[in-house]
Length: 455
Image (cartoon, rainbow, N blue to C red; front, top):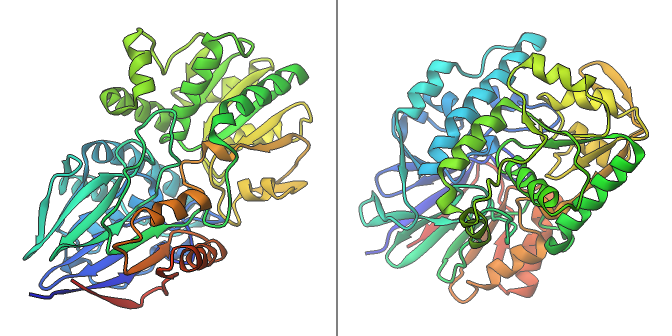
């Protein structure tokens, strides 16, 4: 018997953030992700708008991974009437709580500064978490009648998953964010050969990373250059995955005597909580990490590494003489403790600010990458004399070549590709490459438009 799914895009189209995909089945409605829109601010005003659908009608929310642009509006979804089930991997469920509580803290600071109404409350977070179930990869779950869904490893961050919805032997696959495999820590993304319809990210759909084999070498060079100048190396880093990768990489450089022993500060309470979750899931890491663990190495600890707990310890970092390394929360420099460190060190020509993740259009991080001589932190203008560097190889997102290769792996079964979660230029570029090189219909979908998929 032929069925149809109606697929609509209510976020994460023609923009990187705010992923929110709606699927109407024969009798039930589900969502894949419900993320925060981010850009020039941590929480763009669009987040406060009503959902384009009635949250009380949603039976199931499947979460691909725990980054805020994929989970940040879940408490609002609950506040607005959602009472269905939430499903993800167990690691994603465990990471969601500290991520959402940290998100709330940032929102409260923004709301205090701007006078805007709260997006959601701590009780909304707790209530949403009570609906959440963690399941293993590849475990099939019923969805609607003859439809099932399962999770496949996306290789992006700990617990990240692709969502595979199956009916009548046909597959609708949501990639979430495809990992930039090989990762220093986690396993590679699974190779897919059976997708009928594909909804895929395009964060770097029009760009190439440098060779991932050189990323640690480049990091080593940047550390040595900054230490030689007597400056501070400030790394705005997402507290989830990117910080853990940096700790792991610096640990290896220290243990092999490749960089000078200087103080290294992880200035992020969230990163401390996330690292604790990572320690619980060490068995899920890749073979290289397993070998290091068997040798007795603590991959998240080395001499002169310090996790700061409270704001007093954070402020005390300023009194530690250079050279030093500061990995601070606030990956796009629009919030978090990294702001104070950047305000202090951006005017210093001896220092370096290193970008290791995606910087959204309009963010301070993107302005720095584009060569700004001055930046404005909440009304305070700061001169930029420090060296600004970027290492694309540490991105958790697959680049244009890798994304195209992923599609080619399942080209024989594909009917249509929806290119999402990228800036408009990036999404349109990747869609055109898929049409040209793979010969499959690929589109950058319009927001709020329904697409009928036959099963």
